[in-house]
Image (tube, rainbow, N blue to C red; front, side, top):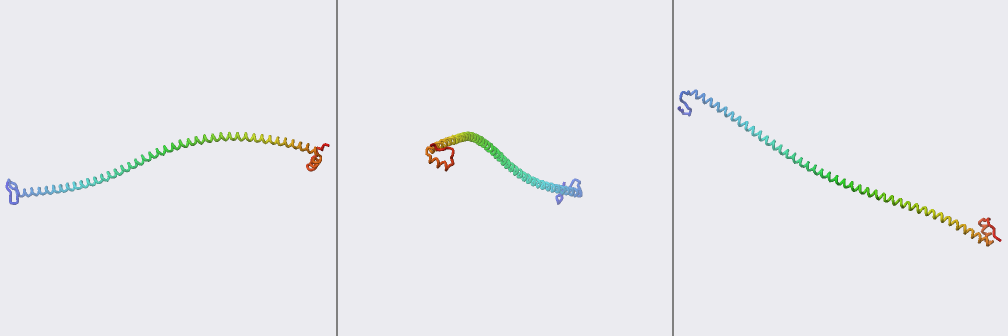
Length: 181
């Protein structure tokens, strides 16, 4: 094999036209390979851009999920606090109900005691009133008895004094008795 001045391999029955064709085929093949390489590089660049885009999308999704998780934790804390508050308020309400029931019971006992005391006082008042009425009746009877006795004594004394009896009789209009003597 021999090489010419350009560096083309010649020899063993290969014609320069065959070599030209071979060079042309090789140059076409190199062009095809370069085009394939360019396409491959373009596809890889597009793939890298897609990967970068997907990575950014995943980062956004992770950030969104992280935000949702944080919000869920905050909501859970709020719910836990509300549950605690409801339990506390329920306990306070139960305590208040117990206190109110105790106050109601004490008030009922106090009302019962007051009613019993009022009934006893009313009984004593009625007894005192009955005793007062009886005393009034007794005093009235005593007053009448004393008045009658005093009237009788006055009349008998006046009948003993004829002049006075006549004056009293004329002034009062008593004609039932006449002076003795």
